[in-house]
Length: 147
Length: 147
DNA sequence: TAGACTATTTATAAATATTATAAAATAATA
DNA sequence: TATTATTTTATAATATTTATAAATAGTCTA
Image (tube, rainbow over the protein chains, first blue to last red):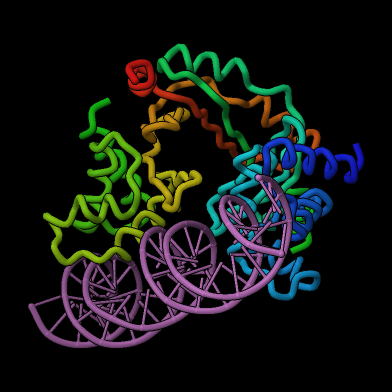
């Protein structure tokens, strides 16, 4: 699935849900898809400074909220100060390096069983879950060995 | 396991790790254990205002950090603005109501298998994971039906 | 026990992320 | 084209958390 296709689909979703496709929105989506990372709002802002010299940070926040509302983007809140934003593709989880902060995707079938048990025990009507794993990435493990 | 026993154990941990047991620390721990909730730093601060009229917010933050470092407390970062702090007892997870924000504990064996797979696929050395489930609690489900 | 040293608390200021507001600009619609 | 609604910008406001320095309390040793 190419970046271009993902972008087209995303723009389609916006059209369907009646959200205007402004140049800023186009650029933010494009960046989220192509960057292959999980940028903060500020990182997005800085990355697009060249193209949009007078874009406001508020615009980035506003549109990330809009994208979240139509389900194109997920907000990730880790311990650190600022949220990170992830373009939603398929069911994948994240593993996060506690040394350098790198976030790597990995795929796993999904934890339906846990959801079912929790629903049964607590009486909740479950909508979704969140899971991530923490550790030290191979690069940082090497670092450690050298010192 | 009574609150009192948990508190004693916690104080013991502090002693072992050479962390001084000040009245403020005692009170914060006591509150975390007895409250059975997942308070924010500010909630803790407000709850102890009576006992310690001139305690600083910084003290709450400082000590929560200290407790985290010795493993007595976990910091939970959800989407909302402020972190919540949870006294670590045993391996349990949280299910969170999207309507009223209530957080309920539930026990589950632990997701070692996911950790192993992630470690294998990504080359990370895994230390721990985080998982929580979102849904609507039974109270809020009732609310909905009435309106 | 006195004195020296260290850890902790307090009070305050600072940094930072995010949201709110109002005016200007842009796009959509009739 | 005139009107209306949406979006962006610029700015200010809010709130959480951290940093700093002085004051206090606790610990240790001579």
